Length: 399
Image 1 (tube, rainbow, N blue to C red):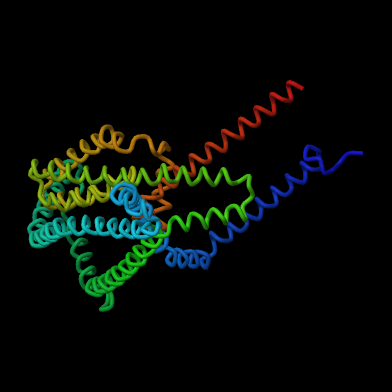
Image 2 (cartoon, rainbow, N blue to C red):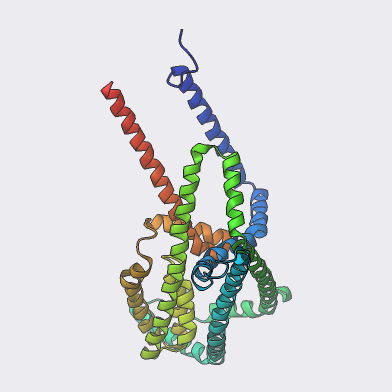
């Protein structure tokens, strides 16, 4: 009589397949219900809004951990060596020194960059009427050329004037551009206050994580041993190691790389004689932190800004940025980052899109290395499974 408990028996295989199909069907039904149910998205957005300061704090702690380790292991390494009771002082000195150092760097950059950025914005606002006239004149010349060449009349301003009138005055008093700008200003103030709240909470969370990380690691290890089956312990260890090696080193390297690109951009634009060099360099440097799409996100609005100022400056800027990105992609980036991502463009797109949609700019930055970790772990799992199948096949042939 056959044993139905034998995992290799036909009945056992049918049972496993049935369970798998049932689970897949349930997951598909729940996913479809969640996607097409507006309440689900409202709940998801609410949850993301609540946990986002915690996520930002974890991201910040991930970055701060590197200078903290340097302070703890290098600068204050002799504190508490003879007297173990002073180890608490060593940790406190390391935490305080790290955050003071980071705050000093941020304050220094703000003190240097913000006045020049504000001055550039004010200058642009003052010269905006002149830039508008220049752009209008250029548009008229292009429209005349198109009219003569392709017999398409773009100089009929009646529709444009009607559109401008509706835009300025609105179809009624409640839809004027003034009310739109007022709503925009109120929303901007609210977003600024909410962003400040998130920043404060994130800093507090990062300080707590850094100062108690040894205790948190011990607690997580105990929970893992107590509740997670032992066969998953190696997988969890791989997740930790890959996350530390890929995410941490990539983020630090990307920040250094973007700072270098920002400085080179400022030097190059100043030599060429491009207006608003400081403002453009800050935008290019910050957006360059975003993998793959960052240079385009930063260059497009800057090119449009220069198009209003002078089309020739816009052309020279586009050529310069293209050369700078080639330099970054082929020389600077590989020297600093090495091959720490190793994923195709589609995974970069997924990481930037999902990360940005969930957690904004920080999500765009961290989304790609997180996808790289998942991709690496999935690749290892697939390779191990293939090796096991080959081993089983070879054993059966030997038998």
